[in-house]
Image (cartoon, rainbow, N blue to C red; front, side, top):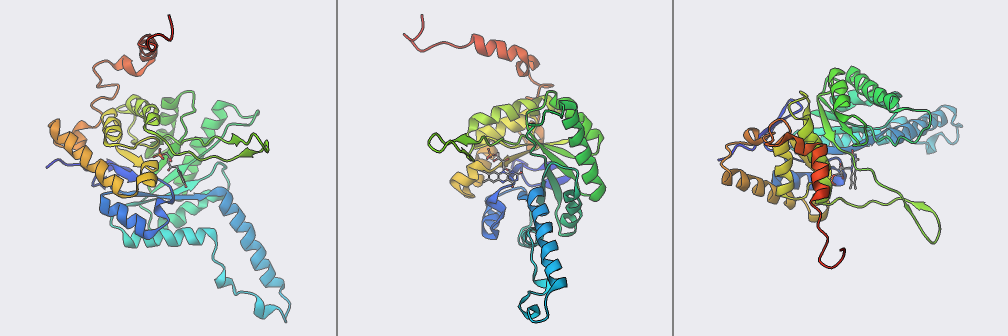
Length: 337
Ligand SMILES: Cc1cc2nc3c(=O)[nH]c(=O)nc-3n(C[C@H](O)[C@H](O)[C@H](O)COP(=O)(O)O)c2cc1C
């Protein structure tokens, strides 16, 4: 029997398949079905900075009205205990997931500033989170902020979060950094426990009739996994951080490649939103069968065996690969001369 277990953020998971932050954790029944299908852990949808801030203003208004309420209207006002805000709802869902599931539940905080939203990490810890994912979904649109400023802010956000919780923290990054390995090392030095590679940026669309900029969410395809696999392969063995990949992992083959490159965990979202929780079980079966066929005893044994450090041709992960890819192109017969 192949041992599928993996270590991630100091947690021992039964296997490396983890449903990522998304609506998959909003419904208890869906979360149970994911656990039944074999999920090694689950990441909750995010608690967003903007919604926390909005909630705080709303609560302040609510309690202000309580304080100045007119005598005859007093009876119409709900009592303070009746106010259930955004954060309360999130904490309640976290507690429900923790009591319904045996697998670790990773909470997610999502924002960009160094303001008070990071304080909520402590409440997530108290509510039972096993670890925290910190997603800094930052679009570098300011003319005043340099790349170095942005990296510094990521490191400060991580360090500040670490001051609030003793939980392991993984930072979910975008791929758009000039020097991802250097940033990873800075985050490690600041106390990060893991990285999640990479956020997908959702691109707004232009409606050609109304000329409005409209939001557009397209789910991923397997073709996006290659970017994550390359960077995991480059990071493996160079950092002590746990490494998770997210973005484009749809099949057992995609997952196997990520593990060979050095991932500790492969997060799944689009594949499960499209096919349902049962898809996770199919991928897990495919992973087990592949390991047996290739005579691996465990996921641990295969992990990183095709990372840059261990690859037969390490340069294949760097510029040399770019040149040989371009040279390998042949056009369909009759299109070009
Ligand atoms: C509908 C939807 C909701 C999501 N919500 C969150 C979220 O709350 N927090 C977060 O960090 N990522 C969120 N994500 C991103 C996913 O966790 C994941 O990183 C991304 O979809 C790439 O993985 P995939 O290719 O397997 O879909 C969401 C994705 C989708 C499609």
